Length: 111
Image 1 (cartoon, one colour):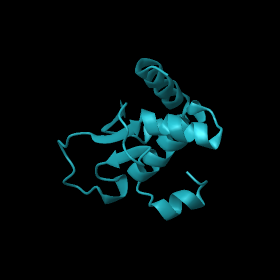
Image 2: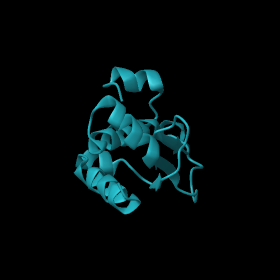
Image 3: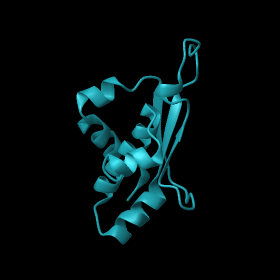
């Protein structure tokens, strides 16, 4: 899949998220990188909502990076659609933004 088509799918999936999820996302940038990341499908960089204090002002946006190559590869291995894998990875990284660790994310649905 071409990078622009992949980005369009990410945007469509983001737009389809429940409003309460989107409303909870503040100062967050979501990007796509085409390169092979090794084993990472996505990465959250920033300060989770649960760790932000009163001094959290004028800060650069937190960032979620989705790795196109790895997502496509794993979707193929798992025999699921790329869209389904994008959604799972995006929700997983949003979970980190909200302050959930890996264990809690697995409890909530295996993302």
